[in-house]
Image 1 (cartoon, chains in turn brown, blue):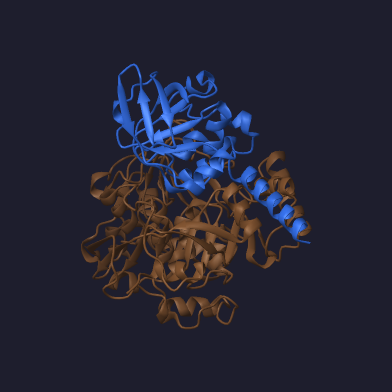
Image 2: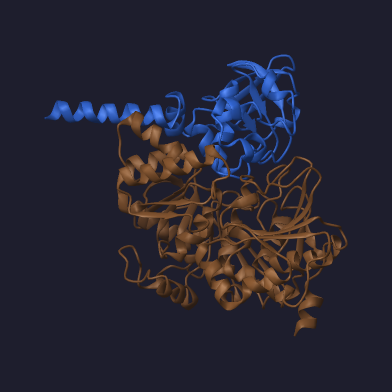
Length: 428
Length: 169
């Protein structure tokens, strides 16, 4: 009896089985870098070694941090990235197509059973598809690019089961903020967190991606969801079935009943309220009631965590036929070009624009603290992003409250932090 | 190694060590802003060989290795904390910055002189007459740190491989 994490790692290590705590060397199925941690950092080190990328088919590059370029330095970083990708003969280059964690599965790169490394902490997002995907730094990426391998301490699994169904107006983001508050930012112990239960099974893929994404805020190495029919549907649409590393029998990639776990938590989804995390930590989370009424200057919908198509739809459901409060601003930075196009086509983007939202360029935007939309001194912000560390998204004196896209949208309308559920009720 | 302690609390994140707005800059310039939001005298005050001591969950957040790199660039030789963000821990060792897990850092005062013995897994505070245990770093990682980090370690490995191939030709 094995956990999903053990099965994936054993395969990558070429072993029959592996035990938690063991240190193993794994073959890497896929590596991903973006423009900030990628070529500009690894190229000089590869040159110093006189080495080349071990397998150009297995290294995906995405530009998302310095896009669109705000100044000559950013232009230079992007220029270097593009030139290097061409020189190296890399085939998988997604240039200004969206945020790496959204683009990767969108283009069918992430498949169940794969072991994937990404040069970004939110790389755990790939775990939503039953891949063991985790974030690493640039020098560690150099090691992968030279050897095609990486060492791992086999993790134990913390199983988090959500029973029942999430009520209307409550989303994966709320579930993760709740867990940050309950378990703390080291609750994941740099082990594997696996999400399961009826409520998780009922979530669409992009909501599962939000769960896996914020496993990073729990301090887990990976955040996993076992693949099922919903996963298969996504893989099919993304053209990922029949690819070399695809594993046709999705049923293999799950935690066996009775497999030894590090811990097991069960929570009732049906009683979860929208959550808000106060400055300056995702662990400062609690029900929206505790923060309601707090005045804000800006509402921000962005990032891989909070501006996918599913997230934009949540915001639009709240804001359709309504207006952002006078004197307040709502900024929306869609997570990928495809999601933006889909949102445009179906009217979601228009609903946001009609409500008074400013639609910003796709990319990481203010979430990573890069670019021209950083928050000003003393600015009070409610945001659908993942982290509200002091100074991360703007001036040291700016303050960020984290919430779901529903709650951010409701707060934009009220000009203060507000519960989205009465508005959704009214709209029905 | 014996050195001056710079003491920090719990949950020091990567973004405060390597702020996003300075990530475009060369590491020496970025390092000048390292931890300035929480301790403005840090970057200017650190001397080569100093040691950073912290509480729980040091280096949570981003995978940006400019966080440990900035500490190293300022002269910090080792970080001792009750626990680390997982990615930061790996990044630190990959860059040749010693990262030691010690459950009892609470008793180490700011400005103290301490001695760190990573191989024995021991921290000594001569003035306080204290000896604290820390978790040893696994041997294969210690070898990498002793080579100066992953890049010099790989360089050595590739050279050995090449030599071996030439000899067996």
